[in-house]
Image 1 (tube, one colour):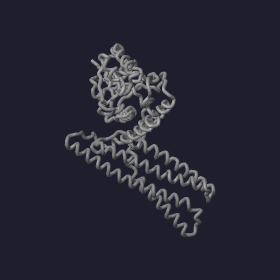
Image 2: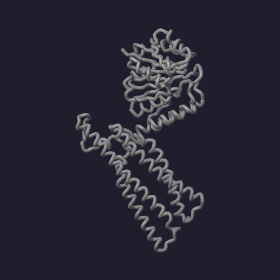
Image 3: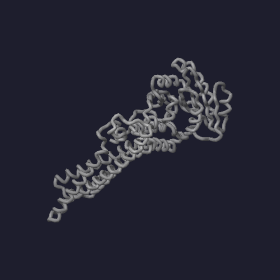
Image 4: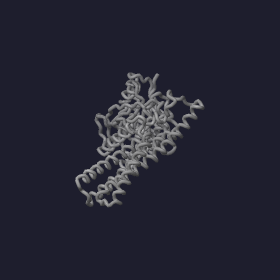
Length: 416
């Protein structure tokens, strides 16, 4: 026997609540055809000031839960989740924008192996979504697909079905409207099997409570901060690599100009060179900061985290374990180049012939120092992680890896 518990959060929804409740109750036969035998409908009245609660209380077959004060969309959903008895839990809005007739399809996807099925308003079905919100949803879905390395078309959909056991993996969730994008972000990083089902989207009944600017900003912060809590190097690494790439392009242009015989730089060339130097050092710092944060996330969570910049092992061992010799080699190269350049200057060479070499020497020294220092920090963090893991093993709380000579953090934390 499989039960679907549908949760509807409602705040001042007297215009549409009766219709959506009856539409949900009408899908029982369709649910049975896909293997869902029982339907439980829970409406969480988030301290409405209109007749929402009164209307729902008169409808047979609905469980009404009342909040004594207004707590927010996410809080209402979580109250409903805590009251749900079904193996499957679904939810949708009370304003009539989402079609409950698609719940059987979502359930079928979950019963066929997915852990979370999302009704996608952006995946091709007819949609009456306003243009500004459509653009916003495309942006947020693209952002989440980038930082999470998982293609998703509708990160903020308010119609979903999931297995109740995933709640312990995606909690905590916020009390506000940003519950859905955070749920999507956590689900991706927790490697929860997700699937999307195209659904139509209708114009809402009553006045929308969503503010494009205010809530859009909250959604953006929610996705970024949640992703950073799981896999910092993904975001920091992308930003860092872009800046380092810009710096290398500018550096190549300067070298080619110098080789062509140009000794003096004009105002624009100086400005470009300044941008390149700042971009290079900033990009490197941001990149190694992301790597360091990944170790800190592993240490604070007291478990290996299978995340990384690319999602697969590009270097073996991981790139951060090479920072030591890379930093030392870069530092030595910078010192040698600087010493030779300064020696030539003392012996009468004109500065016009040496400025590029001195500049390159300074950059190499700074980069070498940065890599060497970060390598030391990461080794300390890795040692602390090993100490925690080995302590748990000695206490019998975890099992040792098959290869005892391999570090758990080194095996499971991908930073590049």
